[in-house]
Image (cartoon, rainbow, N blue to C red; front, side, top):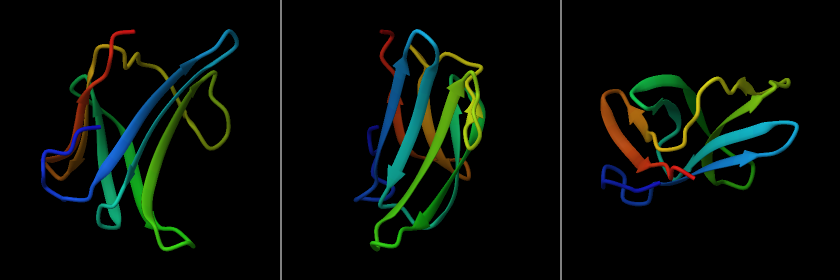
Length: 102
């Protein structure tokens, strides 16, 4: 994910893993203030990333999707390919990326 400069150290990653029996998609962010951040994909809010301080002192959060869904993950009922991904603090975009089409 690209950092537009709201938090200088902020970084993030979005991963899509299609397999024969399931598809996994996750967005992880780090080095932002502890709190809740909306995840917007293709103009729609699809969930909230809860950023916490980890036992090792790092600050990160992750939102995981899967189809078929499993405990601890959200149902992947959208296709992120070719969609704009934004991580929002209120109305402010703190991380963004146009996800590749393939």
